[in-house]
Length: 274
Length: 233
Image (cartoon, rainbow over all chains, first blue to last red; front, side, top):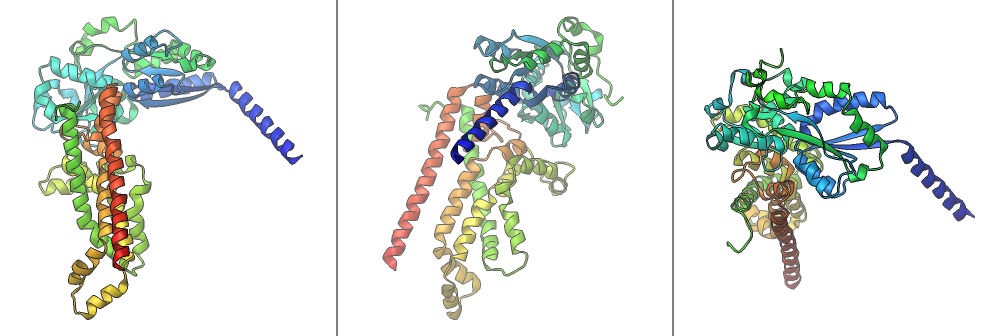
């Protein structure tokens, strides 16, 4: 008798749990570290508009997250800082949507101990810069672009002995922010976040020095039947979301092509605190 | 050893890992022995506090240690200011910085086996040495050390192998510089991140074999010591 009651309770509990998870649209997003601030803001706005959805974002390096998605990690959306990773996942039948470009990223020279707005890449050879932080070029897209920009400026060999490598772009920024590295090449989106912009300044690196940081996202195979994944993907096209991306220094796809020649991008930026 | 499929960077990482682990173990044996001795002998009311501090790295996430070390050893931290004043420069992103981090991180793995060994000593041996008018230092070297060799063996092996396996703290403090601060665990991580799985497999496999051989030899040696002890008594 007790046993039967126990079993029934268990069954009821199991049904309750499964229906509960079917009603609430839990959305799990994996996103590149450069999106830390922009995507958090977009998420806040999204949740305000869709209060039933519970959104969790995991930030990391695009390479790592891509590996995790490939291995079946339970992410519904994957925002990469390099379009190459979603393309690979799509080719491996791990995507439930087409590869959607959402932004073009920019790299900047950033420091809070030197006035970076008065510097250019050439200054990195100076002795006062003992440690220069970049993201690891072997797997972090921003690190790869930093390497390309330094190589294109013929500075790579001189600067290389001074480089320290962050695991992803936010650790790279942390190396500089803590003062352990004198300066670093980080994402404009991070330099523009309130925390960093009140204490440091940046110089926008010309985008003709490196391949474009074309960023894209996919709905993963795991997120195929998650309605919230589609809602969030659509929301990325909404004017509010696009505006927030622009606020953090991203160039929007479709508007990105003509920015390369714009004088504004070639001119050293003033301190972002202004 | 060209027949092994390791890159030059892999070899550099292996060498650096061995240097770092050997260095940290040596420092820990020198610093840890008096500390463990004190812990085993003292009746001070601070003993629980010190014992807790020594055991902290067992519980703390590596990111906490790494974060605070970066803060302390950086230009605004007091350790960083001290090392700069002493003309040593800054510790982060250097071998010295990783050594400091490893010593802290592996501390419990050396001090606790020593502490146990010292506590297990037969007090009468020390009393006998004292009646024979051996000085404290003499008694330590001729009585305590030989009797605690198992503790020293365990402490060295655990200290060394735990430092070999270290990842989070050295990644944060070391800055992942190839050939300079990139140890094997980071090299594996980088191979995985850049999807060079076969390279990752070789290095990771090496680590698995290393861990097994180390622990196996430790147990075999302990067994041998047990047998010796049984024969003597």
